[in-house]
Length: 323
Ligand SMILES: [Zn+2]
Image 1 (tube, helix red, strand yellow):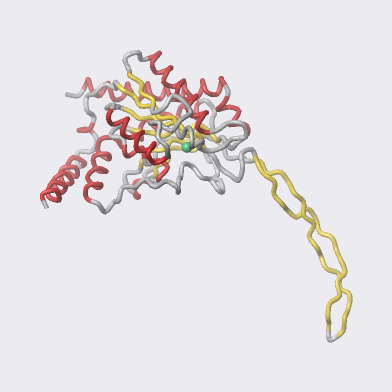
Image 2 (image 1 turned 180 degrees about the horizontal axis):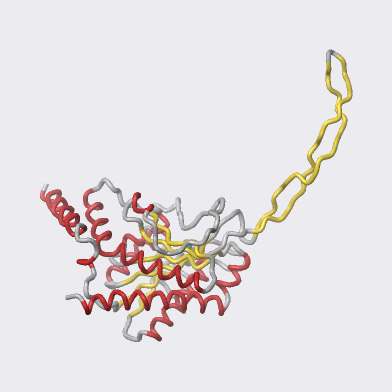
């Protein structure tokens, strides 16, 4: 009973905080610690490419990103959820590892959480064979007409197999949607006119047993409001900045995605602004080469670093000018 009352109090205070928009949430706090979370790992290779795995590419890019941030901001502490090809912990299953990622971020009192992943779409990395009608031929068939057997010429399709290239490409950055309706909030990032691909999977992980927040549970509601108040806007800002930098480099900008799918559960479990960056499609031959290349990884890291610099200036400046 007392617990319920406390929850109600927290809930009501969270609502009243929300009334003041985001300003009260711009806590004058410098960014001291960044958690970098390379997706998947070990038993969980993530999406397969033709010659690489999402887990390994994400790890390589994450380590380079951490090095780069350290080089430019030596005072910032970088904490990785993993630095080798294992599940974070190291844990023996995906769900335990997922909880560990969030716990580590929270226990380390991170100021920012950046998860690095690769995207995937289609039936197979690179492409696959399909079947289609190449032309028609005719054949004679005996058919019954008015009680008599007669010859009839019929059209018969001739099939051919052909190569279907796995074309889905580009970058996108996920933030946790505060609630279903918020998924409709438009981000400020300019989203190029790509076509949503068939069979596009994103980070949706239906096999995960991680319990998603139940929106009807008051404790979860209160927690989500705290997230909404303190971290949502900042997460969205950083996600937009990252996408803008990708676009400037000429990458296909698939925009900022606000979801509450299982695959990005970790974003709401961390008590800090958090983004999940899909650095490219490992299922696309060209992009798989790019995200594995020295040049590609350097560009990706520079894009995220530049976005982070802008983000840092924006919030730390606010922190010093408002008192
Ligand atoms: Zn992933």
